[in-house]
Amino acid sequence: MNFKFVAGLEIHVQLNTKTKMFCSCPTEGPDIPNTRVCPVCLGYPGTLPVLNREAVVMAIALGKALHGHINNISRFHRKNYFYPDLPKGYQITQGDVPIIENAYLELSTGKKIPIKRIHLEEDAAKSVHVSSTGRLSGAEETLLDFNRSGIPLIEIVTDPVFESPEEAALFVEELQATLRYLGISNAQMELGQLRCDVNVSVEVDGKEGTRVEIKNLNSTRAIRQALSYEYNRHVDAYKKGETVPQETLAFDEKTNQTRPMRTKQTSEDYRYFPEPDLPPLVLTSDLFEEADKYSGSFLEAYKNALHWIGKESEARTLALNKDQYLMYATFAKEGFDTKLLTRIITIDLPNILSEVGKGWNEINQSYISAILNLQQKGEITAAVAKDLLWQAARDIDPIKYAQEHQLLGKKDLDLEQVISEVLEQNPDAVEKYKKGNVNVVSFLLGQVMRKTKGTADPGKTRKLLEERLTKLSE
Image 1 (cartoon, rainbow, N blue to C red):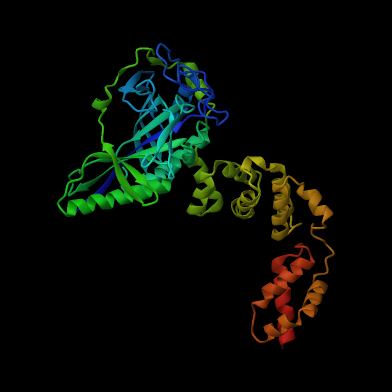
Image 2 (cartoon, helix red, strand yellow):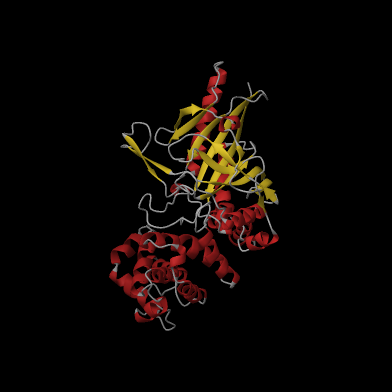
């Protein structure tokens, strides 16, 4: 028996609009439950929806970025189902005519992933399950927060073209980065701003197997694990001659297993019909012009990063972090050495910002520029540069700090004299070197760097130390 993995994705993305999809309630504000609500998003009878213009503009921007066909006329439908988080008993979404069709996302691997449709809709309320695990199973009660009800969503539906769990996760990562570069969504999966449903099946000797759906995967790690588990589960069942039921599943990250939620619903179950309270959505030229303000490309960033860094994995990591990439790109375009940038922007600074609890936008970029200038001119060493990065992250002017602490390179530094002092103060280390322990050179180098406050050139210092130690060993 020959088995082939097949999967398609349905991704819901919260848009960065100031107000909700069909009312004027703010999308951001205090986290107090049920405070950013009104009769429209609470589903009161007799209320009428008013479409959010900015959500339409953002959808057009995404359609352009993903090379899609943007329908000048589309329409909204009612998707009917009963669930506590949906007070109207239906969700306003787009049915047979979405705003965007036949798009694609080109991955960093060069493969183009076809996207069947992209449509606008409203989010449901948030269910909070009161239990020790926070899950519905075993919950004593479920609370509802309608602050999320009506938040603008874009749903992105791919064709079933993914050939491995890794490829599906890669698509989500790079779509997430694309949304961030455009500026239309923060797309943080851990906050529910990007949620992923997966349809997966296994072909057996070229014949399609049963398709199941896994709901609400909230990390790329969960996507890889859930799809890997389901593939193996299906293969085991088919090898035993068993059938796989068509159903909707949930994935438990603690056990790395899926569990049934309900039998899978079809489009007929939702009884779609045109939304009578909204006219067809007709796109005008001014909407397309407004969409141009949302620009940016992950793929372009990745190619630039690859040109600068030369290593695929490191370039990809840099490009996936928009704010970090933009800082790197700014300095690279100013002519700073890319090896120096790679060490400071991709190695030293991320760790420092993590330690002080700051984001990339919270550090004074002119401070970083000053540190880069000093090191590129040879006025400070890498050790001093790292010290100054710590000060910059704490909002301390690195130039003034370097001057006050005499950290700038001294032209008249008598390195030979400092080395002599270090050797005299550490006779045990010298004896160990004479007996063949060359590792003590690193220790002695550290002592010299400490005496010179990091202003000595490490490479030159190591060479001089080895020369002196060799002579002493003769």
